[in-house]
Length: 73
Image 1 (tube, rainbow, N blue to C red):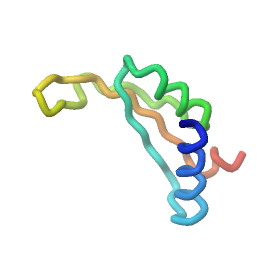
Image 2 (tube, rainbow, N blue to C red):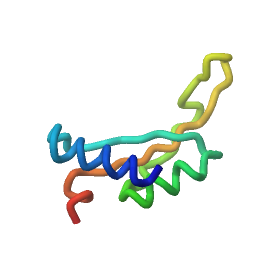
Image 3 (cartoon, helix red, strand yellow):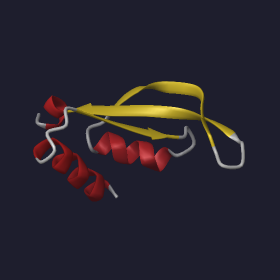
Image 4 (cartoon, rainbow, N blue to C red):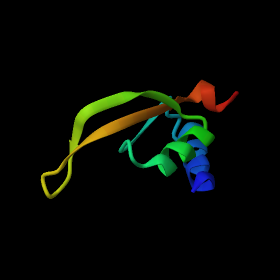
C-alpha cells in the first residue's frame, strides 16, 4: 500500500501539478495512518464527528496532508 500511495503522490505532484494533497482516515485505522506517515504526510488534526457512514453511524476523521515541497525534500 505504501508503494501505491507513493506513486499517486508522485503523479499528483509531477503530472497534475497539485500543490497540496489531503487524506482522511478514522482514528482506529492505525495502518492507514502508518502508510500516510511513511509517505511523508503530516498530521493536521482530528475532526470530531466529521463523517457519517451509510448506516448513520458517526465517526471522527483524522486529517493528514502533504505539500509539494515536502514531497521533494
